[in-house]
Image (cartoon, rainbow, N blue to C red; front, side, top):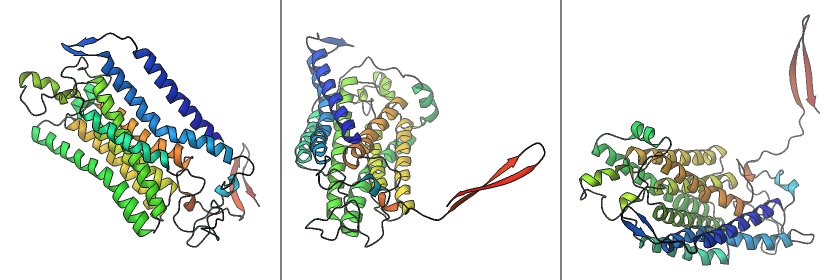
Length: 381
Protein backbone atom coordinates (compact mmCIF):
# COMPACT_ATOMS: atom_id res chain seq x y z
CA UNK A 1 0.00 0.00 0.00
CA UNK A 2 2.87 2.41 0.69
CA UNK A 3 4.17 2.05 -2.86
CA UNK A 4 0.71 2.51 -4.31
CA UNK A 5 0.19 5.66 -2.25
CA UNK A 6 3.52 7.04 -3.51
CA UNK A 7 2.41 6.39 -7.08
CA UNK A 8 -0.84 8.22 -6.43
CA UNK A 9 1.09 11.25 -5.22
CA UNK A 10 3.32 11.15 -8.31
CA UNK A 11 0.24 11.18 -10.54
CA UNK A 12 -1.22 14.10 -8.57
CA UNK A 13 2.00 16.10 -8.91
CA UNK A 14 2.12 15.56 -12.68
CA UNK A 15 -1.51 16.61 -13.04
CA UNK A 16 -0.88 19.74 -10.96
CA UNK A 17 2.14 20.65 -13.11
CA UNK A 18 0.06 20.32 -16.28
CA UNK A 19 -2.70 22.49 -14.81
CA UNK A 20 -0.31 25.18 -13.63
CA UNK A 21 1.60 25.27 -16.91
CA UNK A 22 -1.62 25.71 -18.87
CA UNK A 23 -2.80 28.53 -16.60
CA UNK A 24 0.50 30.37 -16.43
CA UNK A 25 0.93 30.31 -20.19
CA UNK A 26 -2.45 31.87 -21.00
CA UNK A 27 -2.32 35.40 -22.34
CA UNK A 28 1.48 35.78 -22.33
CA UNK A 29 2.70 38.32 -24.88
CA UNK A 30 5.40 37.58 -27.45
CA UNK A 31 8.96 38.10 -26.25
CA UNK A 32 12.12 39.17 -28.12
CA UNK A 33 15.57 37.67 -27.52
CA UNK A 34 18.54 39.12 -29.44
CA UNK A 35 16.44 40.09 -32.44
CA UNK A 36 14.79 36.71 -32.71
CA UNK A 37 11.06 36.67 -31.98
CA UNK A 38 9.81 33.57 -30.14
CA UNK A 39 6.06 33.49 -29.54
CA UNK A 40 4.72 32.56 -26.13
CA UNK A 41 2.47 30.01 -27.81
CA UNK A 42 5.47 28.00 -29.00
CA UNK A 43 7.04 28.11 -25.55
CA UNK A 44 3.79 26.95 -23.95
CA UNK A 45 3.52 24.07 -26.43
CA UNK A 46 7.05 22.87 -25.69
CA UNK A 47 6.56 23.29 -21.95
CA UNK A 48 3.35 21.26 -22.07
CA UNK A 49 5.08 18.62 -24.22
CA UNK A 50 7.70 18.28 -21.48
CA UNK A 51 5.14 17.42 -18.82
CA UNK A 52 2.82 15.46 -21.11
CA UNK A 53 5.70 13.11 -21.91
CA UNK A 54 6.27 12.54 -18.21
CA UNK A 55 2.55 12.07 -17.63
CA UNK A 56 2.30 9.50 -20.42
CA UNK A 57 4.91 7.38 -18.70
CA UNK A 58 3.30 7.68 -15.26
CA UNK A 59 -0.38 7.43 -16.21
CA UNK A 60 -0.54 3.65 -16.69
CA UNK A 61 0.86 3.18 -13.23
CA UNK A 62 -1.84 5.46 -11.80
CA UNK A 63 -4.41 3.12 -13.29
CA UNK A 64 -2.47 0.15 -12.00
CA UNK A 65 -2.37 1.64 -8.51
CA UNK A 66 -6.17 1.78 -8.40
CA UNK A 67 -6.52 -1.79 -9.65
CA UNK A 68 -3.80 -3.11 -7.37
CA UNK A 69 -5.33 -1.37 -4.37
CA UNK A 70 -8.46 -3.39 -4.86
CA UNK A 71 -6.43 -6.57 -5.38
CA UNK A 72 -4.49 -5.93 -2.18
CA UNK A 73 -7.66 -6.20 -0.10
CA UNK A 74 -8.55 -9.50 1.56
CA UNK A 75 -9.35 -12.00 -1.14
CA UNK A 76 -7.01 -10.40 -3.70
CA UNK A 77 -4.98 -12.94 -5.67
CA UNK A 78 -1.31 -13.22 -6.54
CA UNK A 79 0.00 -11.15 -3.64
CA UNK A 80 3.18 -12.05 -1.78
CA UNK A 81 3.46 -11.48 1.93
CA UNK A 82 6.33 -9.46 3.46
CA UNK A 83 7.59 -12.61 5.18
CA UNK A 84 8.19 -14.22 1.80
CA UNK A 85 10.48 -11.45 0.54
CA UNK A 86 13.16 -12.28 3.10
CA UNK A 87 12.98 -16.06 2.64
CA UNK A 88 13.71 -16.47 -1.05
CA UNK A 89 17.06 -18.11 -1.69
CA UNK A 90 17.28 -18.79 -5.42
CA UNK A 91 18.67 -22.08 -6.60
CA UNK A 92 18.08 -23.97 -9.86
CA UNK A 93 14.86 -25.91 -9.45
CA UNK A 94 13.73 -24.11 -6.30
CA UNK A 95 10.16 -22.82 -6.48
CA UNK A 96 9.72 -19.05 -6.21
CA UNK A 97 7.63 -18.24 -3.10
CA UNK A 98 6.44 -14.97 -4.67
CA UNK A 99 4.62 -16.86 -7.42
CA UNK A 100 1.30 -18.45 -6.59
CA UNK A 101 0.14 -21.75 -8.03
CA UNK A 102 -1.73 -21.27 -11.29
CA UNK A 103 -3.06 -23.62 -13.97
CA UNK A 104 -0.12 -22.57 -16.15
CA UNK A 105 2.36 -23.27 -13.34
CA UNK A 106 0.74 -25.94 -11.17
CA UNK A 107 3.95 -26.52 -9.21
CA UNK A 108 5.19 -22.93 -9.09
CA UNK A 109 7.79 -21.12 -11.20
CA UNK A 110 11.52 -21.76 -11.30
CA UNK A 111 14.47 -20.10 -13.05
CA UNK A 112 14.54 -16.53 -14.32
CA UNK A 113 11.00 -15.12 -14.28
CA UNK A 114 9.04 -11.94 -13.67
CA UNK A 115 7.82 -12.02 -10.07
CA UNK A 116 4.07 -11.71 -9.66
CA UNK A 117 4.33 -8.84 -7.17
CA UNK A 118 5.93 -6.69 -9.90
CA UNK A 119 3.91 -4.69 -12.42
CA UNK A 120 3.82 -5.93 -16.00
CA UNK A 121 3.71 -3.84 -19.12
CA UNK A 122 0.34 -3.74 -20.79
CA UNK A 123 -1.99 -1.91 -23.14
CA UNK A 124 -1.10 1.55 -21.90
CA UNK A 125 2.59 1.06 -22.64
CA UNK A 126 1.77 -0.26 -26.10
CA UNK A 127 -0.28 2.89 -26.79
CA UNK A 128 2.00 5.52 -25.25
CA UNK A 129 5.28 4.20 -26.63
CA UNK A 130 4.36 5.10 -30.24
CA UNK A 131 3.12 8.47 -28.99
CA UNK A 132 6.42 9.19 -27.26
CA UNK A 133 8.34 7.99 -30.33
CA UNK A 134 6.28 10.25 -32.60
CA UNK A 135 6.79 13.18 -30.24
CA UNK A 136 10.56 12.67 -30.24
CA UNK A 137 10.57 12.70 -34.05
CA UNK A 138 8.20 15.65 -34.25
CA UNK A 139 10.34 17.77 -31.95
CA UNK A 140 13.24 17.39 -34.36
CA UNK A 141 11.21 19.36 -36.93
CA UNK A 142 10.99 22.35 -34.58
CA UNK A 143 14.14 24.30 -35.43
CA UNK A 144 16.26 25.59 -32.54
CA UNK A 145 16.46 29.32 -31.92
CA UNK A 146 18.95 31.27 -34.00
CA UNK A 147 19.95 33.43 -31.05
CA UNK A 148 20.05 33.19 -27.30
CA UNK A 149 20.47 35.36 -24.23
CA UNK A 150 21.83 32.42 -22.21
CA UNK A 151 25.45 32.51 -23.27
CA UNK A 152 27.30 32.80 -19.96
CA UNK A 153 28.55 29.96 -17.76
CA UNK A 154 26.93 29.44 -14.37
CA UNK A 155 28.36 28.38 -11.01
CA UNK A 156 31.49 26.29 -11.65
CA UNK A 157 31.03 25.96 -15.44
CA UNK A 158 33.94 28.21 -16.32
CA UNK A 159 36.40 26.55 -13.95
CA UNK A 160 35.50 23.04 -15.10
CA UNK A 161 35.78 24.05 -18.75
CA UNK A 162 39.24 25.50 -18.16
CA UNK A 163 40.31 22.28 -16.43
CA UNK A 164 38.89 19.71 -18.87
CA UNK A 165 38.71 21.38 -22.29
CA UNK A 166 41.29 19.94 -24.67
CA UNK A 167 43.50 22.40 -26.48
CA UNK A 168 43.69 21.15 -30.06
CA UNK A 169 40.77 20.60 -32.46
CA UNK A 170 42.00 17.05 -33.14
CA UNK A 171 41.96 16.14 -29.45
CA UNK A 172 38.49 17.61 -29.03
CA UNK A 173 37.33 15.59 -32.03
CA UNK A 174 38.70 12.41 -30.43
CA UNK A 175 36.85 13.19 -27.19
CA UNK A 176 33.65 13.68 -29.16
CA UNK A 177 34.15 10.34 -30.90
CA UNK A 178 34.66 8.57 -27.57
CA UNK A 179 31.42 10.04 -26.24
CA UNK A 180 29.60 8.88 -29.39
CA UNK A 181 30.92 5.33 -28.96
CA UNK A 182 29.84 5.27 -25.32
CA UNK A 183 26.43 6.56 -26.39
CA UNK A 184 25.99 3.62 -28.76
CA UNK A 185 27.18 1.23 -26.06
CA UNK A 186 24.52 2.51 -23.70
CA UNK A 187 21.93 1.06 -26.10
CA UNK A 188 23.75 -2.19 -26.91
CA UNK A 189 24.12 -3.51 -23.37
CA UNK A 190 20.51 -3.09 -22.12
CA UNK A 191 18.85 -4.02 -25.42
CA UNK A 192 21.04 -6.54 -27.21
CA UNK A 193 23.11 -8.21 -24.49
CA UNK A 194 20.84 -8.33 -21.44
CA UNK A 195 17.45 -8.50 -23.12
CA UNK A 196 18.02 -10.83 -26.06
CA UNK A 197 21.24 -12.78 -25.50
CA UNK A 198 21.01 -13.25 -21.71
CA UNK A 199 17.30 -13.25 -20.86
CA UNK A 200 15.69 -14.59 -24.03
CA UNK A 201 18.33 -16.85 -25.57
CA UNK A 202 20.55 -17.78 -22.63
CA UNK A 203 18.09 -18.04 -19.75
CA UNK A 204 15.07 -19.10 -21.88
CA UNK A 205 12.88 -16.38 -20.31
CA UNK A 206 11.06 -14.60 -23.17
CA UNK A 207 8.54 -12.97 -20.80
CA UNK A 208 11.35 -11.34 -18.81
CA UNK A 209 13.02 -10.25 -22.05
CA UNK A 210 9.79 -8.65 -23.26
CA UNK A 211 9.19 -6.79 -20.00
CA UNK A 212 12.75 -5.45 -20.10
CA UNK A 213 12.47 -4.48 -23.76
CA UNK A 214 9.32 -2.41 -23.26
CA UNK A 215 10.58 -0.79 -20.05
CA UNK A 216 13.86 0.09 -21.79
CA UNK A 217 12.02 1.56 -24.76
CA UNK A 218 9.78 3.63 -22.52
CA UNK A 219 12.74 5.01 -20.57
CA UNK A 220 14.74 5.95 -23.66
CA UNK A 221 11.74 7.51 -25.40
CA UNK A 222 10.97 9.61 -22.33
CA UNK A 223 14.59 10.76 -22.10
CA UNK A 224 14.73 11.80 -25.75
CA UNK A 225 11.43 13.72 -25.61
CA UNK A 226 12.29 15.61 -22.44
CA UNK A 227 15.77 16.44 -23.72
CA UNK A 228 14.58 17.69 -27.12
CA UNK A 229 11.85 19.84 -25.54
CA UNK A 230 14.23 21.33 -22.98
CA UNK A 231 16.87 22.20 -25.60
CA UNK A 232 14.29 24.19 -27.54
CA UNK A 233 12.86 25.85 -24.46
CA UNK A 234 16.15 27.04 -23.01
CA UNK A 235 18.22 27.72 -26.18
CA UNK A 236 21.48 27.80 -24.27
CA UNK A 237 24.63 28.59 -26.25
CA UNK A 238 27.28 25.89 -26.39
CA UNK A 239 30.73 26.76 -25.02
CA UNK A 240 32.15 27.12 -28.53
CA UNK A 241 29.24 29.21 -29.86
CA UNK A 242 31.15 32.50 -29.47
CA UNK A 243 33.57 31.39 -32.21
CA UNK A 244 30.71 31.46 -34.74
CA UNK A 245 30.69 35.27 -34.57
CA UNK A 246 34.18 35.37 -36.06
CA UNK A 247 33.65 32.43 -38.43
CA UNK A 248 29.91 31.97 -39.20
CA UNK A 249 30.58 29.22 -41.76
CA UNK A 250 32.52 27.00 -39.36
CA UNK A 251 31.28 23.48 -38.64
CA UNK A 252 28.31 23.52 -36.31
CA UNK A 253 27.55 27.19 -36.84
CA UNK A 254 24.21 28.06 -38.39
CA UNK A 255 20.97 26.17 -38.11
CA UNK A 256 20.73 26.88 -34.39
CA UNK A 257 22.74 23.86 -33.26
CA UNK A 258 25.09 26.15 -31.36
CA UNK A 259 22.13 27.01 -29.10
CA UNK A 260 21.21 23.49 -27.99
CA UNK A 261 23.59 23.08 -25.06
CA UNK A 262 21.18 22.54 -22.18
CA UNK A 263 21.05 19.83 -21.26
CA UNK A 264 23.48 17.21 -22.59
CA UNK A 265 21.71 14.53 -24.60
CA UNK A 266 24.74 12.22 -24.46
CA UNK A 267 24.83 12.46 -20.67
CA UNK A 268 21.09 11.87 -20.41
CA UNK A 269 20.96 8.86 -22.73
CA UNK A 270 24.00 7.11 -21.25
CA UNK A 271 22.64 7.74 -17.74
CA UNK A 272 19.34 6.23 -18.86
CA UNK A 273 21.17 3.12 -20.02
CA UNK A 274 23.15 2.91 -16.78
CA UNK A 275 19.99 3.39 -14.75
CA UNK A 276 18.23 0.61 -16.61
CA UNK A 277 21.16 -1.75 -16.11
CA UNK A 278 21.27 -0.99 -12.40
CA UNK A 279 17.50 -1.36 -12.05
CA UNK A 280 17.38 -4.72 -13.84
CA UNK A 281 20.54 -6.16 -12.29
CA UNK A 282 19.54 -5.24 -8.73
CA UNK A 283 16.14 -6.88 -9.16
CA UNK A 284 16.90 -9.82 -11.49
CA UNK A 285 19.89 -12.12 -11.15
CA UNK A 286 20.55 -11.98 -14.89
CA UNK A 287 24.13 -13.24 -14.73
CA UNK A 288 23.57 -15.54 -11.72
CA UNK A 289 26.62 -13.99 -10.08
CA UNK A 290 26.37 -11.09 -7.60
CA UNK A 291 29.79 -9.74 -8.60
CA UNK A 292 28.92 -9.71 -12.30
CA UNK A 293 25.50 -8.16 -11.76
CA UNK A 294 26.87 -5.46 -9.45
CA UNK A 295 29.90 -4.94 -11.66
CA UNK A 296 27.70 -4.36 -14.72
CA UNK A 297 25.86 -1.59 -12.90
CA UNK A 298 29.05 0.07 -11.66
CA UNK A 299 30.73 -0.17 -15.08
CA UNK A 300 27.72 1.52 -16.70
CA UNK A 301 27.77 4.34 -14.15
CA UNK A 302 31.49 4.81 -14.77
CA UNK A 303 30.88 4.89 -18.54
CA UNK A 304 28.25 7.58 -18.05
CA UNK A 305 30.68 9.70 -16.02
CA UNK A 306 33.34 9.31 -18.72
CA UNK A 307 30.81 10.34 -21.37
CA UNK A 308 30.03 13.54 -19.48
CA UNK A 309 33.72 14.33 -19.07
CA UNK A 310 34.31 13.78 -22.81
CA UNK A 311 31.48 16.17 -23.71
CA UNK A 312 33.14 18.87 -21.61
CA UNK A 313 36.62 18.01 -22.98
CA UNK A 314 35.26 18.29 -26.53
CA UNK A 315 33.84 21.74 -25.61
CA UNK A 316 30.34 20.67 -26.57
CA UNK A 317 28.74 21.21 -23.15
CA UNK A 318 29.13 23.03 -19.89
CA UNK A 319 29.46 21.06 -16.67
CA UNK A 320 25.93 22.09 -15.59
CA UNK A 321 24.58 20.64 -18.87
CA UNK A 322 26.19 17.30 -18.06
CA UNK A 323 25.07 17.19 -14.42
CA UNK A 324 21.44 17.93 -15.28
CA UNK A 325 21.63 15.40 -18.12
CA UNK A 326 22.85 12.73 -15.72
CA UNK A 327 20.06 13.54 -13.27
CA UNK A 328 17.33 13.39 -15.92
CA UNK A 329 18.75 10.18 -17.37
CA UNK A 330 18.83 8.38 -14.03
CA UNK A 331 15.30 9.62 -13.37
CA UNK A 332 14.04 7.95 -16.54
CA UNK A 333 16.32 4.92 -16.47
CA UNK A 334 16.47 3.97 -12.80
CA UNK A 335 13.98 5.80 -10.60
CA UNK A 336 10.81 5.46 -12.67
CA UNK A 337 11.25 1.76 -13.62
CA UNK A 338 12.11 0.91 -10.02
CA UNK A 339 9.11 2.74 -8.57
CA UNK A 340 6.57 1.86 -11.24
CA UNK A 341 7.45 -1.75 -12.08
CA UNK A 342 9.75 -3.31 -9.46
CA UNK A 343 8.17 -1.29 -6.61
CA UNK A 344 11.15 -1.37 -4.26
CA UNK A 345 14.79 -0.31 -4.12
CA UNK A 346 17.31 -3.10 -3.82
CA UNK A 347 21.08 -3.58 -3.90
CA UNK A 348 20.91 -7.30 -4.75
CA UNK A 349 18.20 -9.39 -6.41
CA UNK A 350 15.80 -11.56 -4.44
CA UNK A 351 17.63 -14.55 -5.86
CA UNK A 352 20.94 -13.47 -4.30
CA UNK A 353 19.67 -13.08 -0.73
CA UNK A 354 21.32 -15.56 1.64
CA UNK A 355 18.96 -17.84 3.51
CA UNK A 356 18.31 -16.97 7.15
CA UNK A 357 20.69 -18.78 9.49
CA UNK A 358 19.86 -20.26 12.89
CA UNK A 359 23.52 -20.62 13.87
CA UNK A 360 24.57 -18.77 17.05
CA UNK A 361 26.36 -15.46 16.65
CA UNK A 362 29.09 -14.34 19.08
CA UNK A 363 31.01 -11.11 19.66
CA UNK A 364 33.92 -10.35 22.00
CA UNK A 365 33.73 -6.84 23.53
CA UNK A 366 36.71 -5.30 25.38
CA UNK A 367 36.08 -3.60 28.74
CA UNK A 368 38.84 -1.33 30.05
CA UNK A 369 38.77 0.45 33.41
CA UNK A 370 41.36 2.34 35.47
CA UNK A 371 42.44 -0.82 37.27
CA UNK A 372 41.84 -3.67 34.87
CA UNK A 373 41.28 -4.83 31.33
CA UNK A 374 38.55 -7.38 30.73
CA UNK A 375 36.61 -8.96 27.88
CA UNK A 376 32.91 -9.82 27.68
CA UNK A 377 31.47 -12.49 25.41
CA UNK A 378 27.98 -11.73 24.06
CA UNK A 379 25.89 -13.49 21.47
CA UNK A 380 22.54 -14.78 20.30
CA UNK A 381 21.56 -18.44 20.58
